[in-house]
Amino acid sequence: MQKQLDIDRLVRQYGTMVLRQAYLYLKDRQRAEDVCQDVFLRLYNKQPDLPDEQSEKAYILRVTINLCKDVIKSAWHRRVLPMAEGFDAPAPMPTPESEALRGETKQLLYKAVMDLPTIYKDVVLLFYYNDLPTGEIARILSIPEVTVRTRLMRARSRLAEALKGDLKDGGN
Image (cartoon, rainbow, N blue to C red):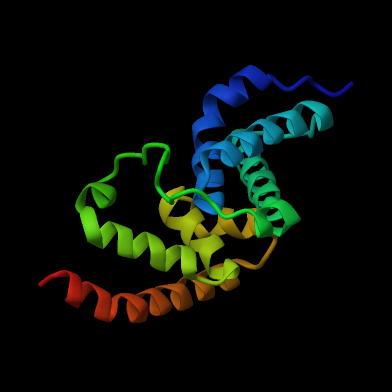
């Protein structure tokens, strides 16, 4: 007999992480909240066998990313103009890096990350925003760990190139 998932605990433990991840993809609080709810409904309905906390987190992040991609591919998302970006963003997790990145530099970096192709954006968000090791990212995305490291390297290179002129101009 399969053990019942404690959905209340999962919502308390991972709810904020799911909402932030969804918001990063969708840039819309309402749709991010809908995705967050769908993630936990899917967990409740499917009752996957998640033996440990790492498996829970990986599964929940994978479901979140997939649902966000489904929303982005939907006809509704393509036809409706998103509201002003950053209007009702969930508060970012305070880290030394996020404290250092303020104002215009933070906006430029965020825009540059969100403009990356999806394969690079996924690894950057999981590595830097969710502080996941490359092995865990490889498991979440179902790709080899060396591919994760390669994509991170290429994403950093693209970000450096994209920000090279912008940061100089913003620092006048």
